[in-house]
Image 1 (tube, helix red, strand yellow):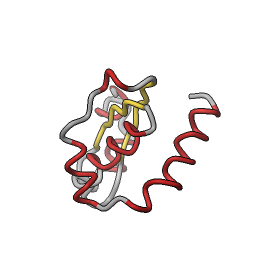
Image 2 (image 1 turned 90 degrees about the horizontal axis):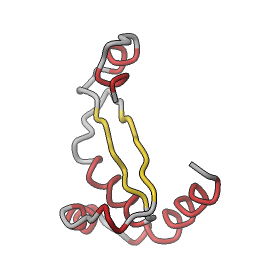
Image 3 (image 1 turned 45 degrees about the vertical axis):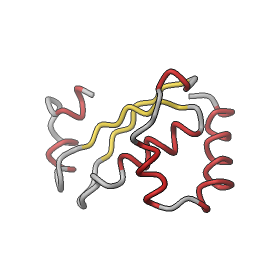
Image 4 (image 1 turned 60 degrees about the vertical axis):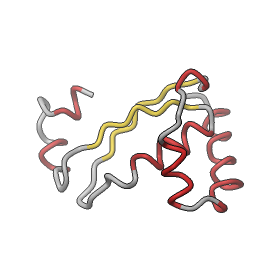
Length: 93
């Protein structure tokens, strides 16, 4: 990913995201159109907490910055299992 795209995402998040609430982002996540984005990134999300409510928000934030985010969500509390196993879904992603 080039630096200009990273800067655009950072600027957008700083300027716009402060005014968006969870429910607005969640509603927007149901109407995303990948054909309206110019880049695609793959994001692996590993956590020792539940992340199901976070993934739709990430997709919206990336989409609004012109990026189609393909997100891999590891199982709950599965960081070590995913990272230390070269045959895990994380590495296949």
